[in-house]
Image 1: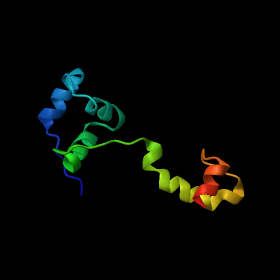
Image 2: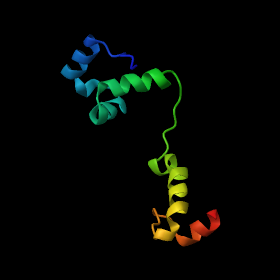
Image 3: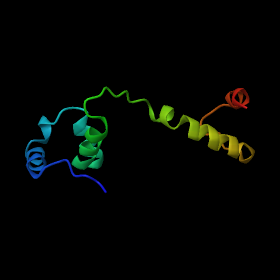
Amino acid sequence: MRVVLVTKEMRAAVEKYPELVLWPYDQIIGLDGIDAVGAFVQCFGGSSVYVPSLRSIFRECLLAAARDDLTDGKSFGYSQRHFRRIL
């Protein structure tokens, strides 16, 4: 069950003054709505969060998929030399 942290008052204020929302939360609202900011704050509020690149986040998944698909010729952006080092 998703807890709604964003009040009606917050929602109305953001709709009226979207340019006053702090960065990067304005970007998150633009991507996935104000509830995404509420969920993010619920998980990480008060802490310092490092945001790596997408490639770093999904690196292990990409490498596992690449190992499975080597025979199909799919490379997922990695060179043959890189695959040899992994294997």
